[in-house]
Amino acid sequence: MPTFSKDFLYSGIWNTRKGPENFTPQRVSHLKGRLQDMLLAGLPVPLSWEHQSKAVPMTRDELDRNLEEKTKGVLGWVTEADLDNGILAGKVEVPNEADAAKMPSLRFVSPTIVKDFMDGSGRYWPGESIVNVSVTPSPVHHIQ
Image (cartoon, rainbow, N blue to C red; front, top):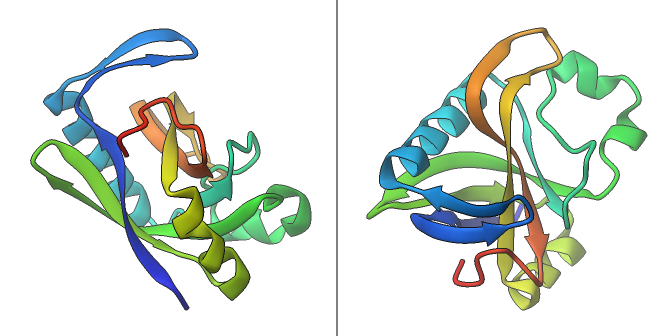
């Protein structure tokens, strides 16, 4: 199965759909820790084509129910999170060879960050969490 290392988020001020957002090193560090905790808790964090509103972490039981609808647009999964010089990066798995072949040409990803996330088992994740990483040709932060 193809696995890629990818940078997800850089420190800095970025103009998002909600307006300017300051991603301080502390904020990026929190998001890395939260992503790592979610992965260690067994939550599959999806990698999707563009932003998909239904592509969010779910328990395995929840994912098994209505799988087709909940995985529409999903091409893989985030498997690791790391922080290096203020850059949140990680690894993603892309099971389908055809999807994996498209990734280098699109080049960019964009994380979906939500506040106060509740997963399918009812576990509450206070504060900010990355719930999806989207492959996109037009990210908010074009360096990634």
